[in-house]
Image (tube, rainbow, N blue to C red; front, side, top):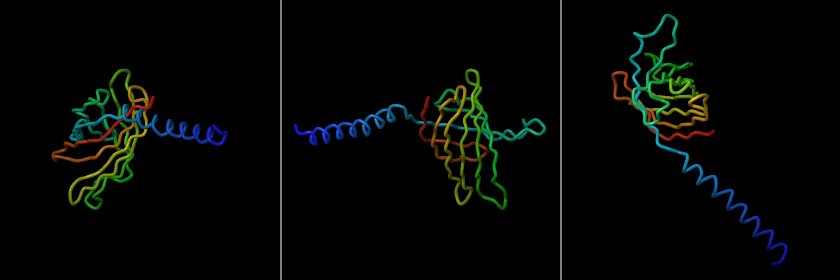
Length: 151
């Protein structure tokens, strides 16, 4: 085989490995995420405490019973039908953990939105998720999408 043919062959093999390996690893690591959260917690807030929702069901154990806090800057209001907020999840699982992300949810004509989480610490170290946000009303909300752990 001529040197140029060897170079092309080796380059082709290297490119094939670079393309195939990450995709197969990603497919193994990505899993479905489902969450149901209750946002009727205003009565339980301590004076000066930032509002939160509680995860009441999830197929990902570290999220069960976690608090989700929204930091804004844009909250639902009569003159602002969108949530545009930085989000922190506080997990009680193991020794605890946090994950951070951002949510953008419209309130009209129907509630629909998305949240993306890009990292965390403790029991949520490396947590990544992309979810669709819906509600059934009465303060009960749902997240459905994909999650992975990048350790």
